Image (cartoon, rainbow, N blue to C red; front, side):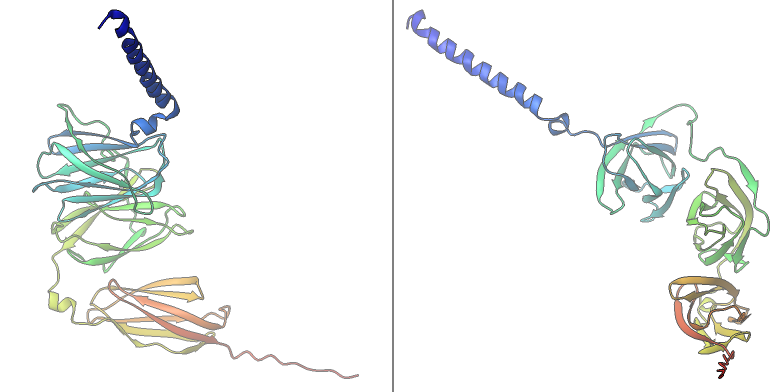
Length: 360
């Protein structure tokens, strides 16, 4: 074959190469970067010193999803011993300490980040995580390697904070004698209206609660069975990051038969009550436990009261119905830590209208 006959083949190959090159370039121009390489929606950085881990989640500025929940878990026989959260986040331990679930009061928006402090029973080299939105849809999930450092960990969430003592009348536990593996009612007052509070026993987050418009709250706390018997630290983390603390004496659990000896129920409750008469309600429940009575007019909560059962498991509630109370049907929700009962009461009045007609 002569050189003259080979030239068309060379030219043909060159043309094909140029066409393919132009196609690739046009593809790069037309398609946005997110179509070619998946953009990182959440970046995670983890560092540890011995068994203490600081992990930071950053929601990408370009991410359209807001993070509501973050789950982190370990493999093998490794478990979480305790954790700390930043303000506005609550957390809980599940699966025998292998899983932590953190939930935000307000979603983590694009461009925002949050840090958690974790303590494990042994050293770990990687941590699994999943981020979800408010509808529990997965946004991203991965396993992040942990960078080991040889100096004190900086900026551990809530490791250094201002702490003040809780005044004696600001919180009240019901019953006052607190036991391990029990449910307690906690009543708080004197906080800021609509303030988010985080309640800790030692390093364990028990509950996150929001106060009402008057700065008060009532909530249920489950005392972990692993709590040590004796003096423990109880802390309330305010929304501004300030901690208020007090010492709690935790007692051993009651005999299980004694705890269940009294069934929760109502002994007496009237169907009707007149204005300025005394409303009396009584019942039975576990000895030295708290009972909450919520009085509602339709869907409007008018008042909430707490009573404590005596040593025999009996409780009584007495209150005078004021003359300014609206007459008509009311509902009363009576509940303890295991059950609630709904009852209806009708408020009546003896007041009689007299209509006098006059004639010319």
